[in-house]
Structure formats: C-alpha cells, structure tokens
Image (cartoon, rainbow, N blue to C red; front, side, top):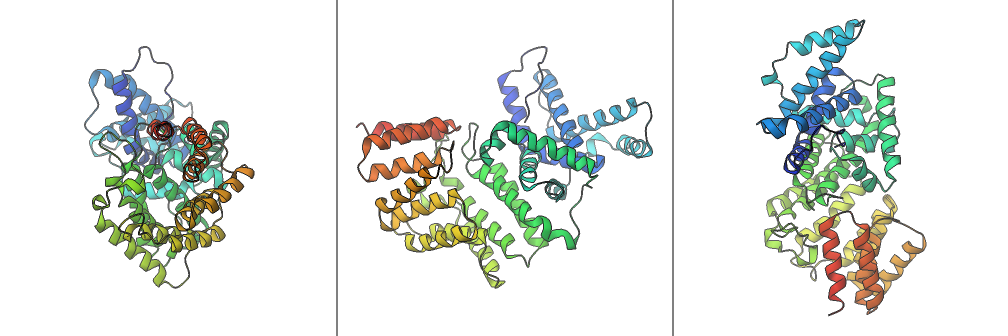
Length: 421
C-alpha cells in the first residue's frame, strides 16, 4: 500500500495497521471491481488508493466499517463519477460510465471472485515486459508496497517503481480491455500468470517484510487462483504442478510458526500438525500433471521435491538422494541462483556439508543473490557443520542484517549467539 499524503492530524497506529490489513485482504477485489467498470487498470488502482487515504482520514473517528472492502469500492466509485463530471466536455464513454455507476446501490457493490482472475490476466498482458507484468500484478493483486516488490524481485526500489508506473501507462495507451483472454491467447500469457501466482504464494508462505512471517490470506488467494486455472485448463500439466506445489507447501502452515509468530524451520516442525488432507490434495494434483504424459516442468519438479518432504516421517528419514536428483533436473529446466542454493542444502543432507559448502562458495564467487540474506544464512549453517565457528557467526549476523523481516533476523541472531555458548 502506498504511503498516504500528509494528513492534518496523525493517524493512530492501530487504525493504520487495520487499514493495511484491510488492503491486504480486500485490495485485489476492490481494484478488480473498479477495473471492470472503468476499463482502466491504472485508474482503478489510483482510485482505490485515494479511497484508502480517505479511510485513513475518516476511520479513526467513525470506526472501521463492517464491510471495509465495499466501503473502499463505493468511495472510489464516487470519486470516479465526480472526476468525470468535473470535465468540461464528457465524451460518450465517460457519460455512460457515470450513468452506470450512479445506478449501482452501494449496498450491492460487491466484487466477483472471477474479477480477480481477470485482473491477473490484464496485468499480464503481452503489451508489457515480463518484469513489468510481475511488478504490476504484485502491486494490484497482492497489494504489496514498492519496497516489498523490489525485495521479492531482487531489484532496487526505484526500478520496481518505474516498472509499475510504465506498466500502467502502457496498458492505458494500448487500451487493454479488462478481461481474461480468449482460448487462442491463453498460452501467450499463461507462463507469466503462473509465475505471478507462484510469487503471490511465495510472499504468503514466507513474507518478505511485516510483522507476520506467514501470510496465509495471500497464500490462500494464490491457491484459489491456481485452482481456478486448473479448472479452466485441465490439459495444462504445469497448472496442476503449481497447484500441487502450493497445496503441499500450504499443508505445513499449522507448524511453521510458534504462538508468538516466531518462525519454526522444517527440521524443528511438529509434522503431526501438518494438514495431511492437503498433502493428499497436493499429491493428487501432481499425479494429474504426470498423467498428462508431457514431462515435468519447473512447478511439477518443485512439487515433487515438496512431496518428498511431505511423506517423510522426519528430516533424517527424508529421501535426500532423490531430492538432489530432482534439484539437478530443476536446475536444467529453470536455472536460478535460488535453485542452486537449495540444491546445495539438499547435497549437505545427502552427502555432507563439505561438498555443499563448495557449491555455496561458488555462488559467492559469482556474486549471486547479492543483497539477499539467503546466501549468508545457508553458508553460516554449513560453516557451523564443518566447525568454522567464527566465520559461521559472521555469516549469520550478516544474514540477520540483510533480512527485512524482524522475526527471521531474530532467529538468525539467536543462532549466532548460541555459537558463543
């Protein structure tokens, strides 16, 4: 959510947090509903942000309305009507919009679930570069701030901001309609849509910032979109692969955090708290992907790795050799430094930390994942295992300084402090 302009009086912190929570939950549906009516995604997001500013001004006194999403949408709609009416000359299109909007009862102004899917496909229009598609979708669907998007995409904040602004201008200039593509155009946008849904889930699975490590609301929205896509495209194996991956990873939510919100890593999780019904759904989705007989893509391979964890009674009894093989395949299908880093972690479990440390040191030499806490955190763990305590402490503290998430930083600092004991 963008920062509001200076207000005449400070907004209480509890109200600000409430508004941010409302935006996280309702923002995508508010923007989708407005985009459907205005036909302009950029304008819809601007109107929604103006409504949030109005909420910040009014809710400290009036209280947060029972249906905050409907309230924000109604305020944004009225702002659109007022703006169009203030124009010296209204064209026929805007006249029709103003009439249509005036005929809608605020009490009936509810977004439709499928509008969010249309929102995703509009933001992933081929008129935009892939980077702009991802940045815009994370903005308007996930409601992430520019800073969060920059961290997720591993780019500077100004770069993320420029991508979002350019994407809005490009969609407006190209007169891109707010709709899902026809059957002949699905393939051109599907890859980007899947990558964005995956990023949404990833942000929910392990938030890049904020006071919650797990954002189940965002992860569940990504999973819902994935299930809708699977229903629309039953012959696309990677859609089922992504659904399988999200189901299997989401099955761990009940065990990933302590009551105080502190992260619990995989090795320390109580596996009896995993959602085993969701594990079954994930495995069934992976089986559907395999049954199509077209080989496993990147999402299905990741789902297969998650399945290995899901069926193992413990970390020690996990089939790490098979996971190493799966990561080798994934590294060829979808190479990335993150895949290489996870591959190294699997190697450390399968054959010991020395080989894994050599792999991680190679990533360091290549200056991979610069600015991310992931590389020093993994390297610190491996250095502990090989007995290089002083170096390990330095890496863990460096990782703590790099992560924007306070609870993750706290866990890393505790590990570093434990090396002194």
